[in-house]
Length: 88
Image 1 (cartoon, one colour):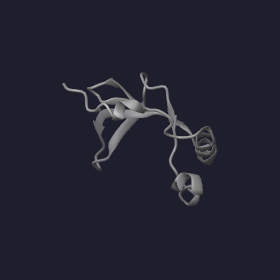
Image 2 (cartoon, one colour; image 1 turned 60 degrees about the horizontal axis):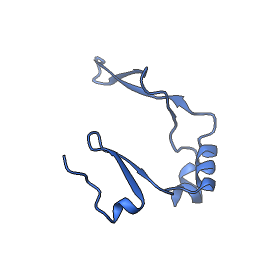
Image 3 (cartoon, rainbow, N blue to C red; image 1 turned 135 degrees about the vertical axis):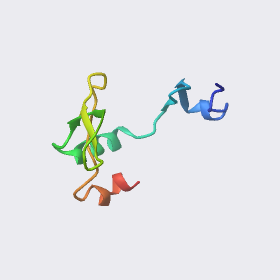
Image 4 (cartoon, rainbow, N blue to C red; image 1 turned 90 degrees about the vertical axis):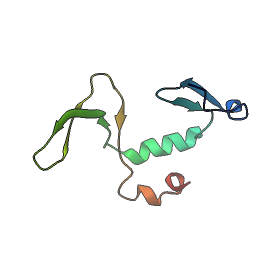
């Protein structure tokens, strides 16, 4: 598979793998922006989950805590969307 980044893109991004496409973008957020977004997440961070392969009777998907993914995540809620840093 051919790389998806052209020479101009490679000035500020690094392509790790083509499948799945994993790219790191240099200086995408400042340190202050990172700290503010983490702060906005509050105490709501949860361990990442993945699809279990099962579907409930109502058609919903079942998710389980991932053994391979050790990250945590949260959603932008409760005024987060109105924060100037989150909106930028």
